[in-house]
Length: 346
Length: 279
Image (cartoon, rainbow over the protein chains, first blue to last red):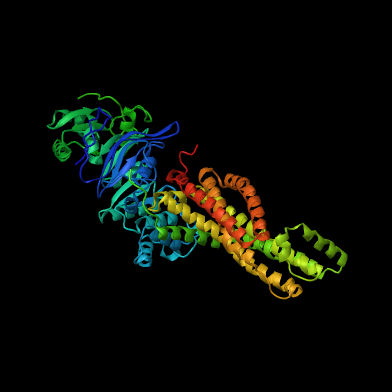
């Protein structure tokens, strides 16, 4: 089940489910005068990929660090698999795997020694060698396994850090900007590997400000700003909440031949312009609309169904909070340059 | 809040071994360490002992032997040898070069320790440790052991080399091999280790608190210099006195070191490994 969110409210009602892997209630964290987290509420589902989205300084990394108990909250409470993280929560930390923003590898040691260190520290006593070799193969670093990590490329270091994070078969994988500094090909490989890892039931929590990465990966998103969660839920449900109507952009050789569309069943409103934007009560009506156009002999030059992306959602939420870049909250404002704010007619 | 869990010595040893493996890979660490040990244990004593035992100027050696009268009577009674050069060589080997056994391990171990925690932070590997199941006490102890071993190992190896050197140069003058004496054994196995532990407990505390390796090196120098001077005087006193005095000095040093270690273990936190909230 997903948290319900109303577009007019930035305060979330977090419905904590028994299936939540991580639950935070009014968690705050201060570093001297600096407030890193301020009354953070969240509930991250088990066995899914949750993405913490937000600008730099939103509190994503601090949240990830609190999940393993690397940092203690200044206020509020956090539970991971029903247990409170902290210095004594050794077993809980053993169930977590972490890839931090910097790969955090020992450059003087070989890839194998880095992996063996992690294996021993996380209590992988049996088959450590076999597991290391299997993960090295999976992450495509087996040829460089006995080379010093200092000579690895950024992509290899990231893959090694990922291999290290899953050696002990964690139940919860925390990834903080895992594609930071990677070229597009390496990023795609890493994201595919992350998706693959969830197939075995691992819960993944990923911090990123790369909206495109989150788009294809997230089962659940938490948008953070100034140390708080401002929106949370499944991406599709969130976008449906903000943009309940389906939108299709249509162009014809003669725009006047499209005038009839505003009177068609299921059409909520039409924004005139190029292209013509037609809002529908259901996306499945697009096919009917096209069929009607063809029947009426309209010569269509463009039919472009628009689905709001996480990027659109992100900027809309940011704009509503008065912190986004610009105030344009119309559908696709950040994916299409040719938008106007107001409907021009119906 | 839950109670602290018991120490997992396997994890302590894993952390110590990994740190030592990194040191072994770092040529820029062990080459100077070997040179330092050689200078203090072999080169300087070798030159001094060879000069004294082979000096042709009998008057000068006699003047040097006469200065031995300022030593405590118990120490004078231990000095062997019939000739002035033999007595001077014996005194130099047994009493006056004792500080090398202290200076070398303290210098090497504190140099390692100064950068160990702040180094994890600077390299970003502190993040890995902070998220790991290892307790901060285990990380602290692992790092302490890894810092102590290079210095103490150098001392043991240097002590072996020094023993051979002394026996070869002074031994023939005093009737055969005589080194190590009981006091030197006690010094190396009973007095030196707690001084290393004490120095490291202080330096690791500094390393956990400062923001850069350079600052850690500077601060550790200030902390360890007086400690080296105390250790120097105590070790000399231990050699001049009886075995029971040496045992007592060692026992006191162990008590102080133990208290300092327990206090030091509380100085390391996960946030310090991450390097956050340290302003």
